[in-house]
Length: 79
Image: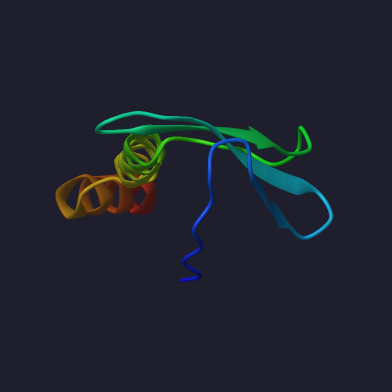
């Protein structure tokens, strides 16, 4: 992890496409602005985790349990 110190109004540039600027420094928080191309998704970490968990749940729910698979296999074999 790269750690940098920035003052209000200063920026960090990542590659040629992403720019992060310190917009406001408060007592317990800072406000940053992020400029990036539309094809790059930007999420707060808690939103990213929620999306990731939802995707994992959706994939898992697509697979039938062992009992259902066995019933299906027997039904197909019986014709």
